[in-house]
Image (cartoon, rainbow, N blue to C red; front, side, top):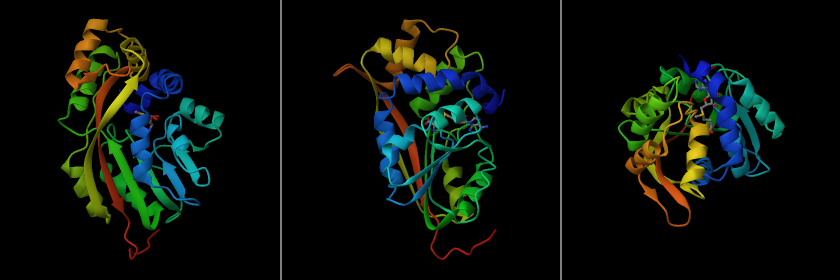
Length: 251
Ligand SMILES: C[S@@+](CC[C@H](N)C(=O)[O-])C[C@H]1O[C@@H](n2cnc3c(N)ncnc32)[C@H](O)[C@@H]1O
């Protein structure tokens, strides 16, 4: 099953988890917003945006545009008064050079042929524009959690193609400069393990209902802390890059 079909099944449950337990991923969204470093009057495209969670972390006088292919997410973005473009991430359709910043949070790991997406993003950014990708990287505990534990307990499975060195090469081949790669380690934080269980079952669509024991074991492999509630160690890789000021315009 392709990712779009999976999200046709999972979107409502993902959105409910994001909205009901919106603080769980707060550290991740703060990190994403810091990297985007959006200034007043800048126009930022969030792709794929899901429910448009990132909007709340950006300056209110910037222009936030959400892009997502899924109708449920598009509806939720509209409900939160986000400007939303409902289309494939491969066919964003913006004119050349009209965006100051593009951000992509955990949306690329089900897309093959990422060079094509990167080059389209390069085209849409203005010279000097910035790209921030944050996603799961290959060989990490989070990659294992998704492709093993989530894969086992979600009837649609999970088969992520995670970030690796080819993603860095692809960005450079597209013309991006200053490509900066860092692994970001932070927590997903809930009030209790029970709340984390509800959040993850809903976010990841764990419709085969893992036992609490199986869930706890999988989280132990990620690393947990019970100081001040219940936290799980989470990790994404950031790839930040700039479209050079002197890049030749093309349409
Ligand atoms: C894990 S969610 C991330 C959403 C949001 N950025 C967040 O962090 O909550 C993945 C997103 O990819 C979108 N999507 C669906 N089909 C896709 C596809 N074929 N390729 C890429 N993204 C897709 C989904 O609609 C969903 O919004």
